[in-house]
Length: 123
Image 1 (tube, rainbow, N blue to C red):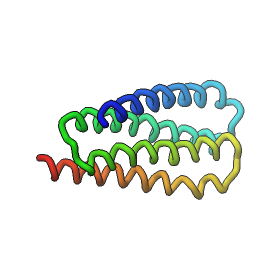
Image 2 (tube, rainbow, N blue to C red; image 1 turned 180 degrees about the vertical axis):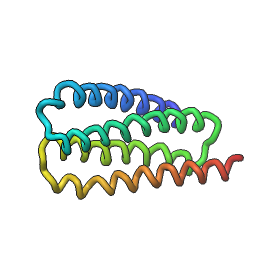
Image 3 (cartoon, helix red, strand yellow; image 1 turned 90 degrees about the horizontal axis):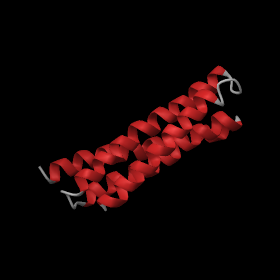
């Protein structure tokens, strides 16, 4: 499980940097200021949680609990859905994508809560 989370963290981190640079350079002149802020929010949460996922992967080497697994997969889900919906909204302007964003946010919250639970299960 540890390897899956570390590889996912690496790939998501790479993608987060690439998309952040794309937003800062290629989209800066093409998006409205409001849409650029939305895109940047997606990139910020993307990168922060990719680093958290790396930590979960490292912890998973020492913890083999359901909670750590839930935490890792919830983070992956949350990054993809939360940040992905914000990227899609900013680039396309399709407002309904904003309705999906809280589902991804819930995934991130579940990931954090499961991480805390894992810490209590394996002090």
